[in-house]
Length: 190
Picture 1 (cartoon, one colour):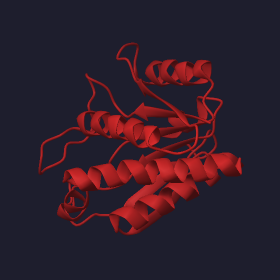
Picture 2 (cartoon, rainbow, N blue to C red):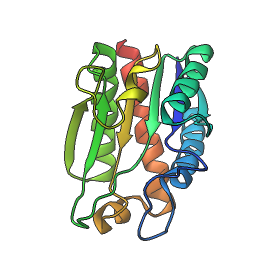
Picture 3 (cartoon, rainbow, N blue to C red):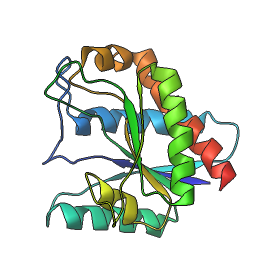
Picture 4 (cartoon, helix red, strand yellow):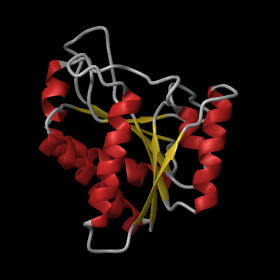
């Protein structure tokens, strides 16, 4: 099993900012990706993991195409793109996952979503479908590669509730472990 982790955003376009630590999505998720690698290395079964970064240049569409071409070249069994939400209303909170709606993408989304909700204790905002037909935020990340793919938004960086669930070392490590646990359960079902 080969799990590709794609860090959402990049050095130039770093995404939303946590209002507590002032970490961008790119910064937070680069750290989370390292924690996922560590969590996989502690797993009893053989699971390969590799972190991929969107390289700036040529615009969003080209960046997505390039990174998922790298994921395909590596031969990923599944891919997970890391993000976190933000909203103008600081009360907005919860965990959600985006899927293309394909059978394997939905299996991956269900397993990872369930593990994140259980671990973080945040409101389950559900699984949202984004694909060539429905379009919507993040859909290119879900349809550009060959492997089943999901895009996760575990918490709102603009919400004190989401911040409290993800700010200390133990919580960050637990989130990484939840993502790995969900991904492995899903890949066993493929």
